Length: 79
Image (cartoon, rainbow, N blue to C red):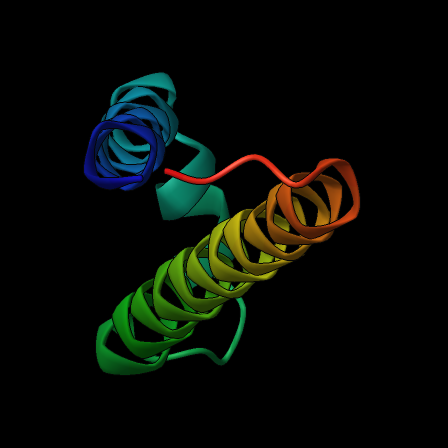
């Protein structure tokens, strides 16, 4: 799970850098939007995306463990 989250955060940071280099951030800042608001929005989106990835990973692992446990109980296998 950690490599997945790390990859997501790195890709978001790379996208931010590309947006800044290409001038898209400058175009955004020509509107009445502060730099702090742009930064806060991007950080919030990254944190929310990280939380979604973590929740989906935990749910998947929990469901998978439940399926394995039921299979082991129904077949009489242990460990």
